[in-house]
Length: 389
Ligand SMILES: NC(=O)c1ccc[n+]([C@@H]2O[C@H](COP(=O)([O-])OP(=O)(O)OC[C@H]3O[C@@H](n4cnc5c(N)ncnc54)[C@H](OP(=O)(O)O)[C@@H]3O)[C@@H](O)[C@H]2O)c1
Image 1 (tube, helix red, strand yellow):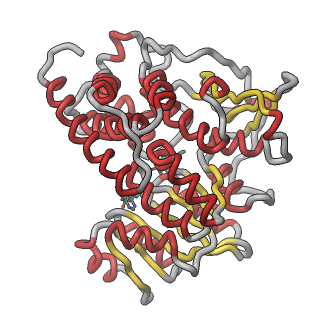
Image 2: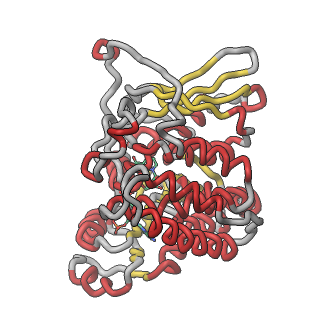
Image 3: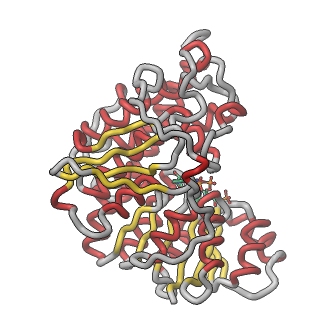
């Protein structure tokens, strides 16, 4: 029986993970649940799965949470409480499904405590890849990808062959605006951008998918997960989202992982690794697929992807600055305070305004993140007052 702490349990990945856990009662059980402030859903989840510990970022909501629980349990609060839920001895596995840079401290805590980490929170590797991989190695932890593309690569390498990898193809749906002109992109609203053609996801990653920043973050994530050089990581737009990614080997042979676009599949692959079990997921029916198509991403219309490659190659604190600027810009866009096309501008100008050093510790990385957020807010304020972007 694996005892799992689900951090970010009230989100899109968190709820899908609980679905997977419920599907395997003999193999998976919930040790802890953590969320930011959605106490209604957290309480419902807790009453169903009865974990020993709940962690809540917003300490002001603890009483409200306790009132809704039908059993006695510990409630830990704040970022420290969430990190403690990642490290508690009663859990074997930690599924990190917190969104954004906020997932890094818990990921580090799980690594130091030697857990199996099922990582959905790509931002942790983007801003702290160096630190996380070091802590995983020194803490005797295990790092398994949940992101569907990285799970696909991981599954292609399941039988070995890491030494013979020539490169990988990360596939991208292209998002809802794949065929939009620059003029149409300038008119995109949050409502339009929140409609993803193939995946149902949280708000931030849905916007990242529409700008292709999501794919950029995934390139950096892949660099750390699979120890690949930047030139070995290629992106292919594949609008049907059936091939989740591919590995090319030195002899030219390519392995791909296919499946319906449902995150419960990669979540289960990570939670139950190395076992395969029936999953609560619709099977792929080839008779319903007329074509699988591929095209190269358009870096002119979607500059976030090349900004991410550039930040990754620059190294040091550049990816942390890229990520912080993106988080600030996406939040302002979702509030209707910044146009869609200003997102890459905020990121580009924030990157241009920062000297890139090294940040080795969690505290140093979080300090860079904070400073980059202030710079991005300043850049965004300047862009807001402009009539054209
Ligand atoms: N959704 C997908 O299909 C998908 C696919 C691949 C990778 N990912 C990655 O998985 C992560 C989660 O994405 P999502 O789409 O599931 O996001 P989401 O739906 O917005 O959910 C985010 C979750 O994190 C919690 N949370 C936010 N800040 C927190 C903090 N500081 N401490 C503790 N909990 C916190 C939220 O709690 P409240 O509900 O209380 O606010 C919620 O449970 C992201 O890094 C994303 O890139 C997602």
